[in-house]
Length: 142
Image (tube, rainbow, N blue to C red):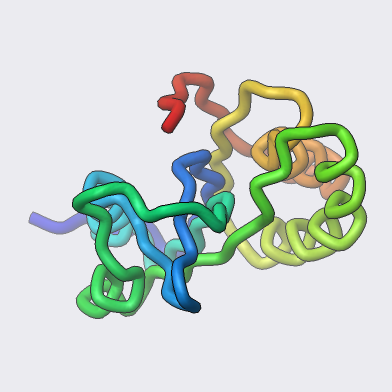
């Protein structure tokens, strides 16, 4: 039985997506998680860091992965794990993240870093907007 929560979910997941020759690739397990989230919310927006590196074996194109998940929208932020990379992207991405926070009914963010921790930026933006949110702190490094 499918239980649907009326409202949009915005999540930050630190699992990167990889860009190769203009195509984004995503991990299959992440797609399964998005499929499960989409069964319980009217819309799911996921924010993930984007890397421009070789695509790990077994990852699939995002377009193909999300073809059967019309209620899922993928947004990316730069993979910015050095202070300079993060500071260069922070202002532009913070504004965009603020808009994503504002439009969602439910918020959940993975946090656990310093530079490049877009989940923490999401949480700070939710605090600024006085919106409730959940956090999780278990992460997998790839």
